[in-house]
Image (cartoon, rainbow, N blue to C red; front, top):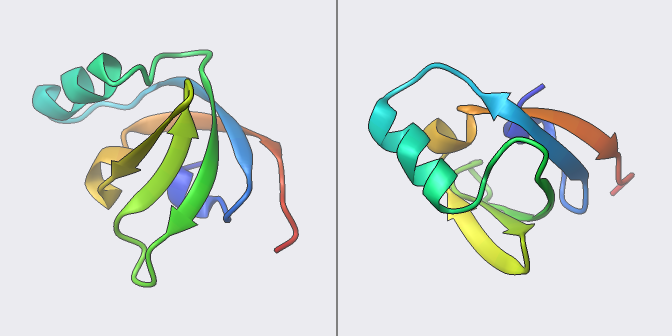
Length: 80
């Protein structure tokens, strides 16, 4: 599952990072997106890029390319 498969209000946990450019992987880790961290989808732009998530009490906006590096497990699905 990928972040872009989620809908607004869904909660998921990061299970790991997929292979990709090291600069993106380092940036995600430095923003606190580490394995085991839960997050909630706050907003998805009309064209799907960027996506806003709430993680560790802050709001982050991720580009589609960055969000695709996150391996996730959905905790709940919001029927919005």
